[in-house]
Each structure stands twice: as C-alpha cells, then as structure tokens.
Length: 273
Image (cartoon, rainbow, N blue to C red; front, side, top):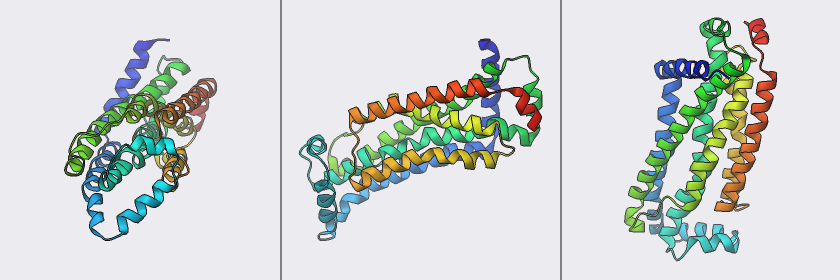
C-alpha cells in the first residue's frame, strides 16, 4: 500500500470538496438546523407547554408508561419540565445525530466518482500510477475524514445549544451523558463508514451525482427506524444498546470494505466513461 498515493488522493478530493458549493452547503446548513436550531429551540420552548393545562402532562406520562423500569431509572428525580427536556435532547435527538456522519459521507462519496464523471475529471485519476486498492482506500478516506469532523463539530454545537436552551429549566449543565459519549466516539464513525462504503460502491457504477446520491439515500432507513422505535416506546437508547449498535455498524463496515476492495476495478469504471 502506497500511503503517499492515498494521501494525495485524499488531499485532492478534500480540496475539491471545500471549493464545491453543492457539497459544502449541506455540510453547513444541515448541522446548523439539526444540531443548533431545533434542539436549542425545543429545550427552551418545550417546558413552556406545561402552561397549557393537561397537554404536556398527558403526553409525558403516556410515553413513560410504555417504557421499561431500566429506562425510568436512568431519568432520576427530574420534575415534569426537566423530564421533557431530557427526553427530547438526550434520547429523541440521539438517532438524528447519526444522520450527520451518514449525510456527509454519502454526499462526498456520491461525488467521488459519479461527480467526477460529470466533470470529466475521472479519466485522468483512473490513469494515475495507483493500484485499485489505493484508489478505493483514498476515496473512502476522502469521505470518512470530513464526516468525522462534521460529526464532532456538530456534537460540540449540540452540547452548547441544549445546555443553553435548557439552563432555565435544568439549572445546571446536564449534557452530554455517558450514552452520548459512546454514540459520538463509537457509533458515529461506524455510521459514517457504513454510509460511505455503500455510496462509493454505488457511485462507481452510476453516471451522475444525483443518481448516486438518491440511491445511497436508502442507507438512512436504519436511522429512521431508530427514531420511530424511540418515539413509539418500542425501544430506548442506553449505553449497552448504543455500544451493540456500534458493533453492528462496524461489522457492516467491514463487509462493505471487503466487498468494495474485491469488486472495485478501474477497468469497469473506464468502460462506463
């Protein structure tokens, strides 16, 4: 493995990402909406719903009634308003956080081959003196590194946003929790790898950036299921569950990486140009 060649591919792709408005705008706007505006606003305004007689109480109690004892034990001795802040910011938004690394990795990976085909720049890259494995690994790291950066920055913004928004209700810094640390350090990198692994495979086989991005969008479905599972009370996120989720994602990453390296051939890509 020629790591200098891999580094050159990563540097080339990252420079292109920074210069592309179509790639940079989603990487900036989506984290701001998901990690700052929504959680900050909800953590501030949701407790005010208690001023509406019966509305907040009924919803919270109905939700908690569906949850098992271990989950209720995690909530401690919060009052009703504090419970609403914790439920939304710590638990409900946790699966949505994983959309960040998935989205960033998918957008950049979709652009890695399909986008270069549209710009007519792929042929020059294909004929460089690199092996198929080096080219594939370089493309993978080109999407994985920005996804990690955005997920870490998004986590920092989220931490500040929910603590500021919920300060009047909570009276202290209550976030992040142990479960979120596992989510950020263990699961988010795996989610990025899962998204880019699938997208690079798709991107190398289609002709346009939009086509690659639309097909790869199906990878968000597991995250949607996590959101629905928590919202309906069918499951809850704990440190153990999140850790096992990360294990599952890393296994999927390993399979996608193995399959990608085995099937990635520049001769087939050249034939599609």
